[in-house]
Length: 108
Image (cartoon, rainbow, N blue to C red; front, side, top):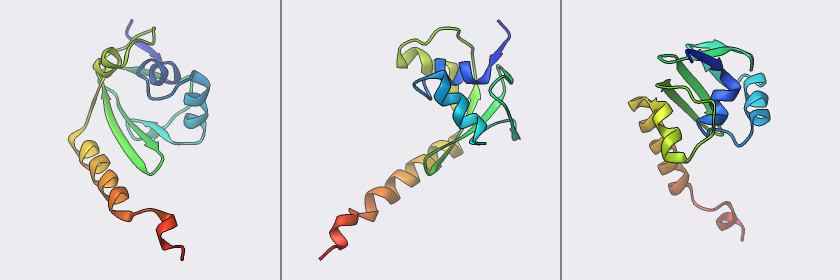
């Protein structure tokens, strides 16, 4: 297998719980392949770079493999490699959320 649909790959790599959710996020423009907006039927292949906005965080991963089945999380993590910049951005965003405090703390 050399290529597969992007919505199917996002589902099998466990970024989204269902293919429907993956397709909805793609349709909303939150997923790009090699810097281009795509549709759910677009094919992805090993070596492609995906950018995904998940909440406030932008994740960038490089596709390492393809799988027609959704497996366990450790197996799914073998399908991609997150870029060092993406990891740093994600950790920085988590730290900022941690330092922000609870919204209810400002209520008197």
